[in-house]
Length: 325
Image (cartoon, rainbow, N blue to C red; front, side, top):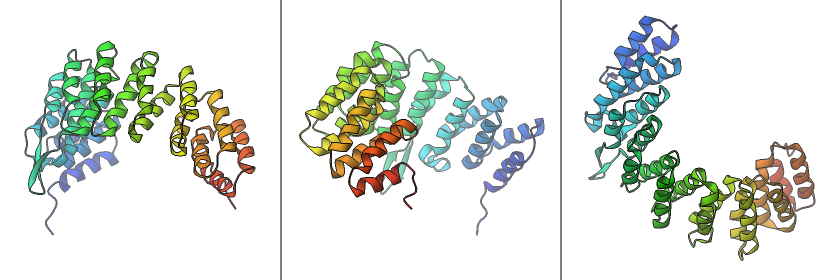
């Protein structure tokens, strides 16, 4: 069997990991970060971050820059480059120019007789790094990334917009939410981002998507509304429950209602647990697990369950970590 050319470099990383901190250990990692093998470079970078050796940040940045110029076979899927950016984020490294290079990087790789771009996740990770550094033109970059061919990049752009306060960010996320996306996670990130940026102003906008004909979009909107914990969120979700004609839709609304963490929401779900049957009752019970660590509410849930069907009792024992024996 042919020896792994990266193995001797990985052995050096292991030696540093098992030893004590010293100038020599830091120098050893610095040398590994210059290695021509991505696996070893990533291992060294991660160990440096774990030890808090921020003096190695420029060396990690240099390694990232080299990988940006090397063939895809050196770093297939951009996994090493993503790991290096994550390490630079841990070090709070601030090279905007380097992250911009990563944001604009495209890496074509052969797959089943064609080529695909595997750098979508890298572009998204670099966008997050630029938000962290306070890059002044970040909104322009994120606006372009929202229409990136790769869904992971678009999703990262939506999440990043949520970290850039201001009406311009809200407008961008509203436009994208209205336009929709082939990847449901992108629209879900828009909903969450809007509720993070300005929950009061965004509540009605996001809530209208609960009426979407697409069940995934409807559920994502309901979850964003519930997670906001706004006083009006609970009333809005209860109104949606009461007008729901199908049990499947009520089941979808159970978790968002529980996530509001309001007394009104808890009481409503407790009544639903007692009133509903079969799958809907089970969905309500599962949603109520958010109160598993609240002894008083847990007891009230159990009291209702004990008056219900056997399947509900069994589910309670499973979901609330009780021993059915």
